[in-house]
Amino acid sequence: MSGPAGSEGARRARVYEVISMIPFGSVATYGQIADLAGLSAGARFVGRALRHSGPGVDIPWHRVVNARGTISFPVGSEPYAEQRGRLEEEGVAFLNGRIDLRRYRWQPSLDELLWGPMA
DNA sequence: CTGATGACTATAG
DNA sequence: CCTATAGCCATCA
Image 1 (tube, rainbow, N blue to C red):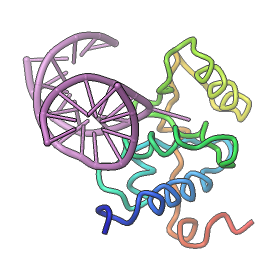
Image 2: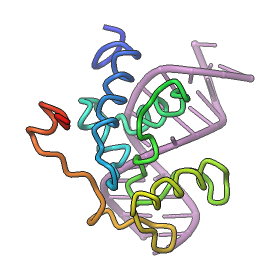
Image 3: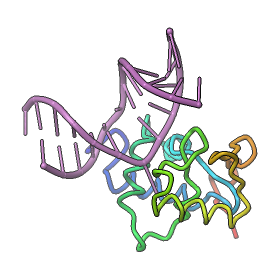
């Protein structure tokens, strides 16, 4: 194999697939996505996959934040403002630039993971 | 090939 | 709250 869990492209596709399942108004962490996608210690890989994605990849990238519940872009940067704006539009609250993960973290059920949102 | 980098994270002090 | 350290691993100079 070219990697611990499939080719680079296959793993990236799995990451996008999981991210597309994050429901409106919820967030997930990089590490959480890596786990759900079956990657080992691949939080960094998730970030790379996201950086590699562009307008062509239609996924809710803004619903992915770091383990501290903050946005991983420099405060004041353009990407930071966009991600934060999108989240606030979905009703996600920021306190001191931080999201309360206990409240907004996506907690998928087994059914949800196996069957997807199922419309 | 080597070393630095980064949309990361956990742990320790 | 902070900084430091160590894992992580594809990518880049």
